[in-house]
Image (cartoon, rainbow, N blue to C red; front, side):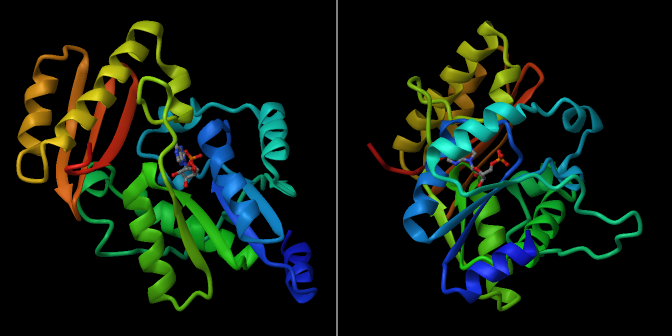
Amino acid sequence: MQKASLQWRRSGKRVVLVPTMGALHEGHAALIRRAKQLGDRVVVSSYVNPTQFNQNKDYRRYPKRPSQDAKIAKAAGADVLFRPAQLYAPDASTWVVEMDQSKGRCGKHRPNHFRGVATVVTKLFGILQPDVAVFGEKDLQQCEVVERLARDLFLPIRVVRHPTVREKDGLAMSSRNLRLNPHQRELAGFWALSVRAAARKGAAGARAHLKKLLRRLKGVRLEYVEVTGGYLCAAAWVGPVRLIDNRKCGMK
Ligand code: AMP
């Protein structure tokens, strides 16, 4: 993969990377289509990164749909679906730790999650040496961490954010949504509506309003809610699935 990518770059092609953990959906497809506009060769990586999971069960149960992934990636315009078997040598001992943007929100509730993310993204950047990498705003804190690491390490890579792609009822698309039963899926829709309604209250009132709305929504267990950088950011559990979402405050 590295040889192919360096060859493309030497021949003047712009390489764009879209890192994913597979089980691709329309949200990923939107990122791939965007990537296509930003360069000449689009590589979609699909790797379920063990070091960013907090629970072994969540890692083992992470959905895998390789043949469907190939179809979705190709239809959206990917040139390569890169599925490395392993990105960690048995004696791998190097970590990339971002120490500011990783604090709080998901970083507080998922110890070492962003260390895993920063490390695997740096490995992928090392393999592909892309001109551009596209990340989804659904994982807003991840965007912030990756932008900071690219800046701090002087990586000549443009990090592009793509807006969150949602289902009809407003739920942010996610591979983990596949694990919701019909009742939980309905609750997840109400969760998404609550986040939107709370954000509309504006930065000052959003946090309290979301807490109030979710107290009435039995079956949705709020993990955190914070307003940061003008965004309402929150995470909650519905059954076995952890949902995250963010909305710009004050938007209609
Ligand atoms: P994942 O496979 O969930 O790790 O996601 C891979 C990339 O796709 C990340 O940059 C995510 O932020 C992005 N992504 C996942 N779901 C969505 C979505 N619903 N809308 C926009 N981007 C997304």
